[in-house]
Image (tube, rainbow, N blue to C red; front, top):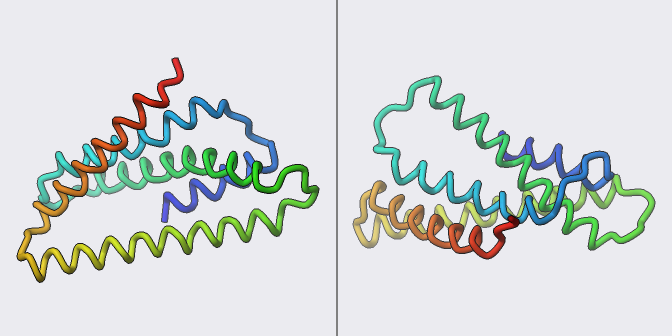
Length: 148
């Protein structure tokens, strides 16, 4: 996906210290990207998406992935310390990260299936609940990590 491509690129560049960005800014931007995505989900009414809007979402996902990759790189560097060869650990970390993300998505899809089937909720209602919770939590995190 675009998000995966984005975070893989910046994870590699930042872990190898080719790209350096202030941690406090990244720690603020990560919940901001979640907040923007959640608000977009809340505002989206479910009509057919134009090709232009679909492309915009793809570009945003990649851009947000770039930001998240910078955050992951800070964590990876703290785990590895001064290790010389980062290629293998970087690859392993990225694979583990992808497995973790797939696991989370599968859990959310299972919960979504259960809510739709067992509790007869509509997709739009479920989307509003999950996106509203994500927006609220990410807003609090943004306030806590305000860098200025």
